Image (cartoon, rainbow, N blue to C red; front, side, top):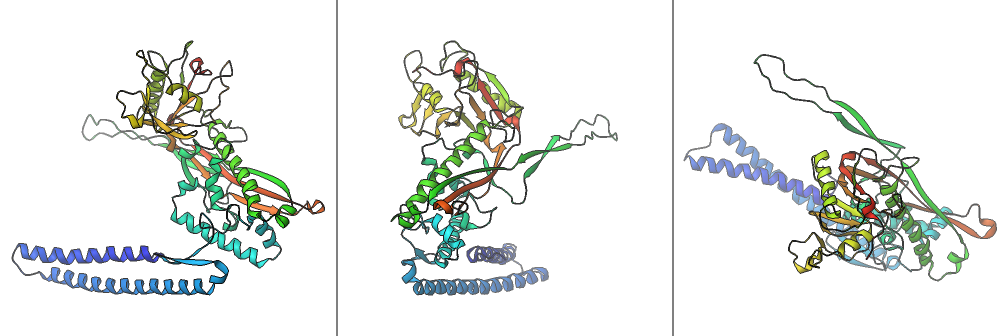
Length: 469
């Protein structure tokens, strides 16, 4: 039995509906043929009616327990109202409402400091410990209520506890920082990093079985044993720290602002680091990025006068790369990834009649080579060949003999698996007590596995030099 009362009731209702359906079916069968129920049917009818009655009782009992839990939660809220602010009634009971914009304990630009509470909790401050515990509960509740992808793969599957998870508004806010984010990383399959391991080995069929025509009856059939291998994904640590003065916490009237400056900046750079590794990782003491992954398909675009349309131009090369993935992977790619400068260049190209070849979706374009859907600086901005176009500033612009080329990737993104654990934040007085300083640290673990290199095609060549507008 599930511990979630609402899910438990849904299960009971489903079982009761099944029993009720059987009763209806038995009655309809006898009526259809104008006959009495058989002995077996009568026994089945009695069993179904007993089951229906039993399940109805369990449903009522479960609803009574839910009502009692709501009442207890309301009572606790009233007892704690002086300490917690005010409470709002919700569908699941009474929930604390704090003065935040994400339902958490630590407010943007507020007086409560996450770092300071981490420090003082180690010294036995019960108020700091209570706030951290409350933040931990709210953090986990939010993760259960929200789609994990909305939190960019942040989860609590591995780590030492929710109190080490930064406030959610910081996790949600890091993409807006003044750094490249992780647009390509966020289209991969994102999974929880299991604890207690430094490498993940994903099973993979290396060569499959086979079938063949049986030309003559009673002769042996084809038998080919499959062989297997593994795709290893080593676990890497991404970490950063900052020394800061104790006076910032003791004297600042808005201590939470310091959290925003330091935590927000460290988490922003963590996002940049992951985004860079997903694309540019070398495979030496770091994971292979998509651009350096062995076994991918290379498409060369050589052009002394690059243009988007026309024979041999970029548009046809993108089509060539799309079919290369389809041919090698036997499934279609899911995304086209390029640098923002390449998409902007494509968006200003015109055909022989000076008509734009990338048109805005709002205009209801006809016969367009591509569609522009947003003006975003990172992430999905449009569509080509029926695939979403992702622009990512982490795509390099210094490749090729002239160190001025930016590649284009065509990928089946869900074939690459990105594992991440909980981002953790800590603060320590050691060894900076002699200078009245603290050391703040943010770290996380990640692993990257590319299951099928056939899912990636990369376009390179002189046709992708620095664009001219």
